[in-house]
Image 1: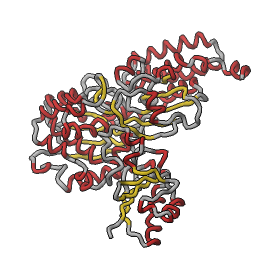
Image 2 (image 1 turned 180 degrees about the horizontal axis):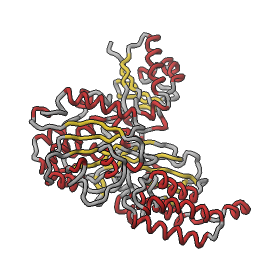
Image 3 (image 1 turned 45 degrees about the horizontal axis):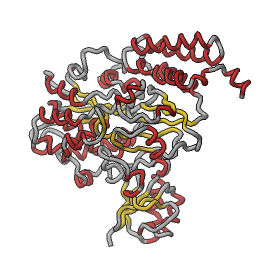
Image 4 (image 1 turned 60 degrees about the vertical axis):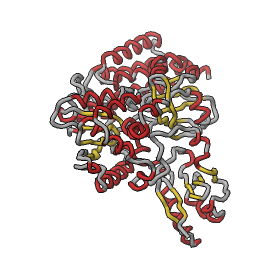
Length: 519
């Protein structure tokens, strides 16, 4: 009789909730019952409220149980869960769970299904098909496919990926580079981490395709040091790709070369900005560069460089495999394809969900997220990381679309969504945004470095009752200076959460003493 396949995630979130102990307990109990099991450490499915999520492969499909702690394992074996039997922690077939069934998983098609560091698993689930297609195409045709797909940068700025690639393809230089920005520092975001931990080969494939398309022969993944699990998975996958000829001097006997390595950042938020990242990658202090020149023309070590984030590059293989038109069928307007949304904060069903652009924020919060975890009304949502605007309930019907969000002075950014119920103090959140900027600013430009410090002081004076009307005028003027005078998006976007909090939640900026008396 063949061994029963049991899946326990190796994802950092699952491990932080005891997945390693759960895996050990499963092996111990299986030995005690004399049951032969094959334990596979897969990636997370993205349903973080059910982690550790254990799956058992049955004739009908994989059956899910969760959250399963080590202490729950004896009871599962007693209920004969290895046959997919009923149990209070059972959720039926994983593929039929509404949270997963209602998604459009393109970039995350394999996440949670395969062993992340098994190359044979990756190949069995359509891996490297995009690369094989690319090897038969001219560089210009590959760039055209990416352009025609409508893929835009998933790192925040939403710049068309094809334009960057075309610029680098046409640029002259003795060496070109592909740089993956994996310095995922925004609060409430974790899609990059989940790809790197749950399906690292798709990132390797996407970067290799980018290299072939632009003439770049060397790539770097700039990874934040706070992601040790991703670091381990990436290095294991890269080693396998080299050993099987998917990286190196002669990729699949094509005569094409692409080398890839991981470099660790030291934890500076500003290094998520592409030019500060390049400075850090060159061994310098992470400070923003002046533009021009653009990195596509003079980037890493002064050479033409493509810089895309993890999700952008990981979206490329399916475009080359299925075609640009297939990818374009998802989404709306100029926002094509899918966006991995990350639900965090005060939300019942926190986790990752990949959906085509076009659904509304309200649908995400209630139909997918299940409303607030506290059961209280959702008062505000911050979309796009710590520099994203705070959106009130009146804007929850805005479709998830880059242009629609820009129309309400907000941004989709990396797809992070942080939820707050009606107990939140929005003045405190606005102050946090300014304080975050003071801590994380690279210090190169005055509006960001000094403006954020003064912003904290002004907000403190407002809420203490020190001529709040005058202070609000000063704060708005200060924010306008930061928007138009800062060297990069760090200072230029910090006012977004501040102004949105002022506009939509003015009552929270009233004098604290007055509030206390009226309580």
